[in-house]
Image 1 (tube, rainbow, N blue to C red):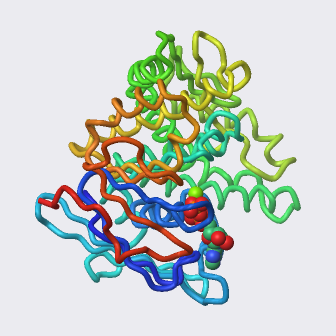
Image 2: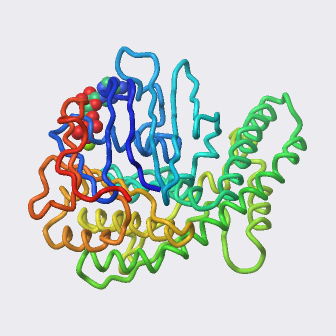
Length: 374
Ligand SMILES: Nc1ncnc2c1ncn2[C@@H]1O[C@H](COP(=O)(O)OP(=O)(O)O)[C@@H](O)[C@H]1O
Ligand SMILES: [Mg+2]
């Protein structure tokens, strides 16, 4: 789907503003701290149901306001979809074409992939960032994954509560059995889907990495199962069940569940070395972009259409050669929204520029407009 326009009400530094988009290449232009990333954040909100850089919706509400609302109009082969996400009084409401909807109805409907400078956390940050990458990427292409994830998270919370109760002798150890089963079954579905996803993107990541760095580099992506070993005989559910059983005493003593997809991780190896520990800053940035571009292609392959690709300041960090390589890599994408503090250097006639100044769209939405929506 392509985004046609978004209306922001009390969202970050936008009071009441409409941003209109061109069908293909969009450039959000403005000095620092004007609200460019906030616009991408709003699009991400409509695609995934949450911000890509802030877990707390309260932080997105305009200073001094009590709620925010983001309304987007999307289009796919002539069919329009209106999506609205609103938050206030600690409640989030989602509407799709005016009808009340759940977050799970939203995920995968539009399809968005964002890449921003914060993405370096995908390499350098804690495992939680990498798990979130996998969860958002796979959820957008698989309803089953999203369902397993929801089941797992619920079972995990219940089981942890129970483990705390057992620790305080307010419940019996045998009582976890009811949750163990759900945990193992949905947990194994999650792990298996993650393994398949890594298989799906591996060669793509390698090709992207080589293209962007201009140097042929062998890439591997390995799933890091913590406290259990994958492969060999036995399916994932059996392996997880064994690990859960083995950890039992420890888990009761600690009061939380210590094995499963909620603690797992993955690693990116370039030339057989962990890029996190041995990669230069440039290699790490390249790795992240290679991952994101692979995510885009897998979404295209699995869903039959490109996601909306949001590129936040990505070119600012790249030298000329890498800029050129990335530009070539993304040239087939459908709709892109990128941000920059500098106008595009050369021929910008296929670019739809939108100037953002202090939470406002300057000159009414579209500057140098070119391609029409079809
Ligand atoms: N909840 C909020 N309410 C009002 N303004 C906010 C809120 N959160 C962030 N801002 C403002 O948004 C601006 C940053 O926007 P951002 O989109 O990150 O800028 P940039 O154009 O550099 O990408 C800052 O001026 C910041 O004070
Ligand atoms: Mg920004």
